[in-house]
Amino acid sequence: MINWKQVTGFDWAAGNERKSEEKHTVSRFQAEQVFFNQPLLILTDEKHSQSEARYHALGKSNDARQLHITFTLRSDETLIRVISARDMHRKERNIYEQN
Picture 1 (cartoon, rainbow, N blue to C red):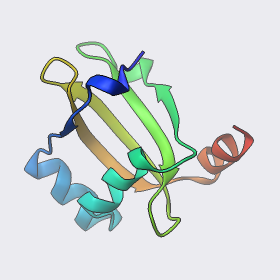
Picture 2: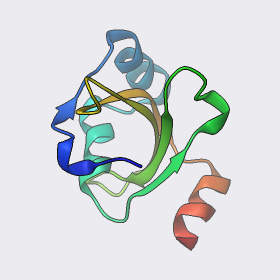
Picture 3: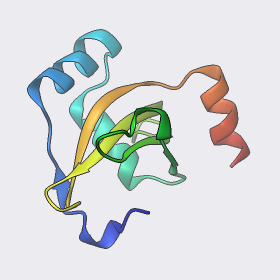
Picture 4: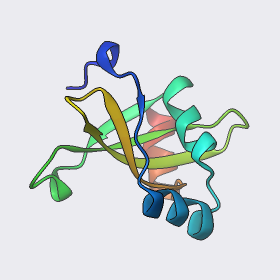
């Protein structure tokens, strides 16, 4: 599981940031806010975790936008690398609200 005490920040790839902003209209700052707001639900992404552990974060931005963030950890698990950020789908909202 993730040791949140050792996470010190974010590591964005330009392509991932651009895709989240242009395709899903989620800014880098909105995506990062999810990790600081409660409730935050973290799920493992076993389907896409062949070479490195991947996770899904379901949470809210500061303006209460419900977001789905796919991410991994880099630099000895001290940085969150956002792979994708988008609005939650209906099924994800149901899972989030039930937890």
